[in-house]
Amino acid sequence: MFMRIDHIGIACHDLEEKISLFSSTFDLTVVAREVNEEQGVKEAMLHVADGEGGGSYIQLLEPLSPDSPVGRFLAKRGEGVHHVAFGVPDVERAMAEIGGKGVRLLDERPRHGSMGSQIAFLHPKDVGGMLTELVQAPTP
Amino acid sequence: MFMRIDHIGIACHDLEEKISLFSSTFDLTVVAREVNEEQGVKEAMLHVADGEGGGSYIQLLEPLSPDSPVGRFLAKRGEGVHHVAFGVPDVERAMAEIGGKGVRLLDERPRHGSMGSQIAFLHPKDVGGMLTELVQAPTP
Image (cartoon, rainbow over all chains, first blue to last red):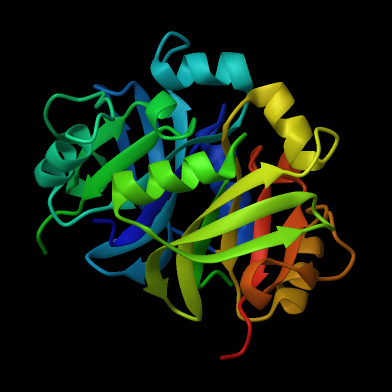
């Protein structure tokens, strides 16, 4: 079902500061920047490696407002890992398969993720406290 | 510097329960089980994918006692992502390079990680609140 660890989503207060920190500390390159109004974040993807069906990234997330999901996460837990995303070949099929095993899906249908991907989130309480994202990379 | 996202370390109260959950929900296979007395954990590695210089895994961690690092993490934050590990070709060289940029290392020299790897941890406060592990896989 999983083809790769697609990305680690890290919540931060200051996107530009953390882009500078991660790119200089680990020699990582920013390959995309986006504002996702639906999710209430501005974000950057830093490329770690290439994998089957897509790459692996560190995703830095700054909330657009304090009452967005990432804004509330920051207020409660501070900066750090917000979610983990796994690459799947077909996000709708993965949602059906995982949902059929009793794991709650936070999305009824796939929505738009970073860099043209299709994504869906799983309820963290059903998967060991880890907010889990499924990612289907766009067809090349 | 990074060759892959090596693993996501997830702290849990009951290793066997979570092995069952993750392997059945995501069709993952346990490839190693270990007790690491030095780190105060028993653990399992579930294989996600193969990558450059080593694989990618979900690592499930159950503390051996409440006063171990993972035990204290669970008491404070509950189950969830404990750390993220990145594969490097040479852990000593990566430690020197990263330490030279002002990031605090939690280990003065590499120690034994899962499946024969050499590892070192970075101070989470210096890398965006993410407890970060460097992993050099054993030579095949």
